Length: 249
Image (cartoon, rainbow, N blue to C red; front, side, top):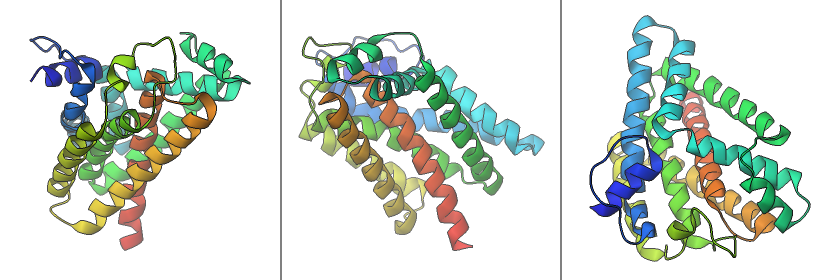
């Protein structure tokens, strides 16, 4: 259970008693579980705010709940990746930029576009009552981190904040996190295989493209890359949910 403690402390601001796991990579077993709780919190906020019938405000509430419950850790990683990947001309330069705590022009622009996209999609999801897709996007966002960390090397030779998670991650973490995510999705979608398969396809493509770009730009992954992948996957799964529903009716 120490892995669950570490997962909560890493991914959320929630105070969790107990000791951290000895090998941080073992927290990956629990990432989808934490994602489920975060998803229920954010979807719950959206549901409560929809009582007023104002989907735009409810969508903003979902986004705000996500930032507050996670300390904006993945949003920060997304901005750092945008600055590093598109602002540096070499691997070393990109890694140096990503380590800088200041947000540059690429990062700021990327954040604005990300939140606009998420907000627009959430307005549609909430107006259609697709809370299952909101939760699914948040769960699969955490799964994408496990997919990348278990498949790619850590990019910094000197180590870093996320090296303890990436080093040692492998097949057991993939199997457990995928299994939990599959069970959660089947429950959320009431066993309907079409949305279930579509959601899994989206996270596979999202994680695959994020991994490919990361390998090309910095020859591996970092904590920022994992966070960026989470944000991208979340947005794409939400968008896929809206498109899936609209295309059927």
